[in-house]
Image (cartoon, rainbow, N blue to C red):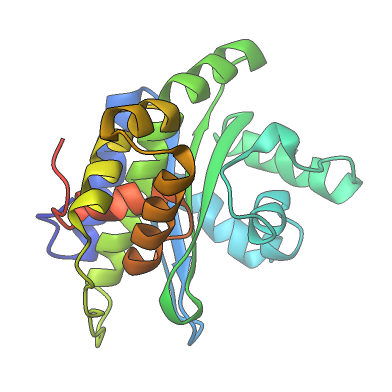
Length: 226
């Protein structure tokens, strides 16, 4: 991702991620504060055109549901009870989309909103096992992908970075290695309350929405190495 030099490279990355994880589709879409949009991914172009022509944006439960959330969303948890939503899903499946989806909403600087989605066709048990095993990877990929897309946005001025303290770096490094908060606190010989202070301070400096986002940003910027 760090070597991507253009939006076309992000399209190639989406295709590579799809192959690496063995899913049906990988899609990324963002809208900035000026209303400019960019999307890339593996959906059939005919479906993308149909989606736009029919203005499905106004009824798509994925868009509506993710815009109201900050955490990853399994499509099964969204409201598909309405006739319009059911018809929309039936139409999507007819164009090659799978019945399962996992979308990660991302809110960036200056009003940017983005979605990173993986989509597949399988039963509920298989999908639950897949998301449980790969959830962390997908969240990190989403934020890496979004960061790179923003880097390629014309006229963007990168924000000044605030350095993390050694303790903040230690805390995020151990979290990135898969340690629980209790294990991190024990390793650093501090209380969990003190650990929370370090994590929140690091999150604020990195401009992250949550701890996972903070770890992703720290990894991407080379602040921590695991």
